[in-house]
Length: 172
Image (cartoon, rainbow, N blue to C red; front, side, top):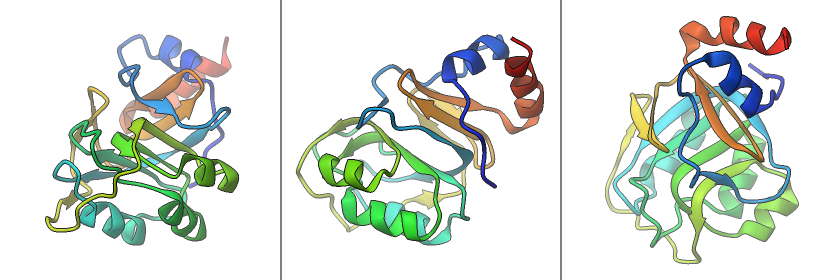
């Protein structure tokens, strides 16, 4: 499902309740935007296995939302994964953790929002969980909730309130 990007500030205004992730979750390159239904991932801090599996399992148009425990010592995403995600038709990724290969990701134009960047690679030892309720950027996110990101940050619109909140944006 391809979604039209909408301004996160206007979505937050229309919601009337907290939908914004913590300010530490930022676009890793200027003018990055994303919009789509969430496909959730919980991984042990610094572990990559579940993130890789999610790229294969998430439907086209989805935004991967990764609970990486806020770990900033190891990157969970880079330009090679961005290339694969583009080939699979994914709309972007939000990582509560670190990423790397920022210049390569920007050159690809793949929307990545994260808590930071670091060149250190992840571990590949422990599995995680997919398609479950997670915490990312201080918010609960469920697969199927709608995720929007722009220069102001990331918001998560609960799927059962999506149409109502988007209609509120369009009436401003």
